[in-house]
Image 1 (spheres, protein in one colour):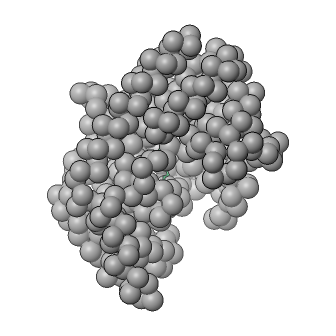
Image 2: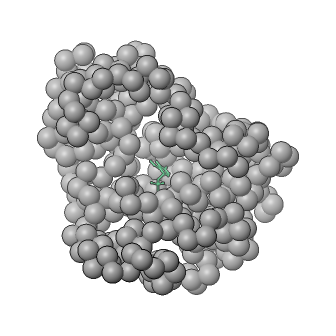
Image 3: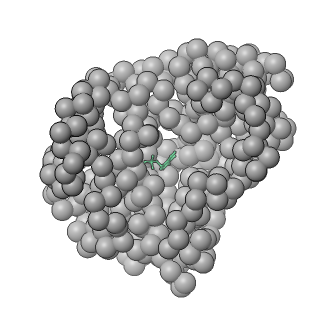
Length: 358
Ligand code: PLP
């Protein structure tokens, strides 16, 4: 399957060439980056140290570091090592799943809106994409998803969901997965798992033991602050892992990301601290956004969806021109603005800008 260039990907995501070409008032470094759900606090100090210590192995292929990380992840989730596959970011896992389980007669099913990547890869390969609107509480519409899944190769589920930051309650998701025919694979993308605090949310990694058609993906890009390093993984039963890894490039991980990821898993403090900062800043943002008269959807992630009550595209353009990069347009929610939770200073800058254009 052909890879998309960065420009093609941006265009497919709906950011028009005009937006991409807009000059930023601030320099790119100074722009406030609230458009990609990155963690502004960066990798943990332990991860930074591990990368410094790994300079001497940069001349070697990454096999040993891969095995060490796989063992760490397997221990963390209490699964056998053969049920873990690393990816060059969790985007890689999504691409592999589309390549392995879909085809001309095997569609992809996904919610609308959700993270678009599976649909983009499927469309690029000429594979049918079936989109099912979220329900009124921005959760998976299980009955309609099930209906659409008939004969499909892959169902992509993002929980918590990007871009809405909402969750599909655990009970509903488990019941959906139990009803899914075994010849259709479910990829549950848990990129934002660590941020979810609702008692109705739970990871479904424990279900992998009994569901051969379930793949659960995670990433080091979000809570671990490693978006630029590229490391993700998935958990699935061995036959599914073999189908995925058959599509993967040799040695596609880099040693810096691998050692940083392993060190991150050992630094329990980073997760606790990132979560706390995120929820404090998010609460401050909610207050200030509401003070300006806007409504925000409930958020279980490191980003929020704000209902602007009007066409959001000009707001995105105007903010970008003023050095505040916010999320792209999601056509299913044309009035909503997706904003990443940055540092308190960055959010003050965002609120200032929102106030200015209100
Ligand atoms: N999955 C979801 C839901 C995302 O929002 C993102 C990125 O924003 C990704 C996967 C890709 O993450 P990465 O490839 O950096 O692991």
